[in-house]
Amino acid sequence: MSKPVGFCDCGTGLGFEMTAGSGANREIRCACGRLHDVALLAAGWSAVAQLTPERSVPVAGFSRELRAAPDAERFWFSFPLRGDVALPVHILFSAAARTAEVKGADLKVHRVDGAGSATDARRQWVAWWQSTHRPHRSRGSSPLVPRRVGRLPVLLLHKRPAPAAIR
Image (cartoon, rainbow, N blue to C red; front, top):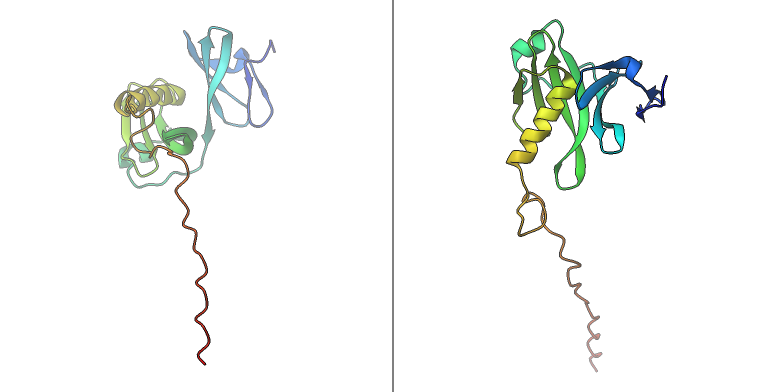
């Protein structure tokens, strides 16, 4: 293998002999089953996202048609849906239908038609998400997450003096 473009969580170096796709983005499938989205950046090829296979996904929200597809593949990846906290986002992909459905947290499923691969569906979903969920520029943070404004004032409770003993 030539110089690896990244490493899988299983420890395997990712190289182009396991790649699919062309252009500025490629998909590398590791022997462990994970898919890696590899992009041509200014510094060269680099792994930018990892899709982890899963046996099943929550059935709520995904179409019956895609769940029943014999070639349906299921993956998840981490993505900061709200603020800086990365949450799992699920992908259900069918290569024969060139269709994927992407769902994160309690959000509705977003359908991606014309997807060439699961990593292509992830890229299209990320582009859609970022174009429709831009943070307010004036606030400097996501509109879904309150800004941090520092510590709240703490009330200091003073002990009341005990009442004087009755004589």
